[in-house]
Image (cartoon, rainbow, N blue to C red; front, side):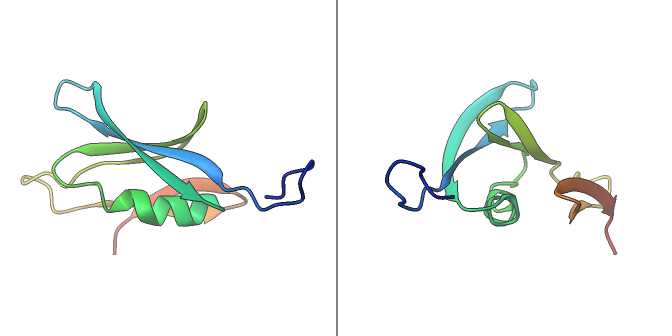
Length: 90
């Protein structure tokens, strides 16, 4: 996005929140990206035994569930009309 005052390019301020087994956020990782799609791809890398939520300021962009040993199905997402839609993994 362009800053109205400077005309310079400004990246959106995303955060990937790592969620502990108690359901509480225990770590936040800053992600600077231009679009939701790019931020989603970068946030997915943090799903490693923990759930992850991706936020842009007060707007929740996506939730990523870690794969459970008992379950072989992963949750994947597609972007439709600017919204994240969960779908079954193929």
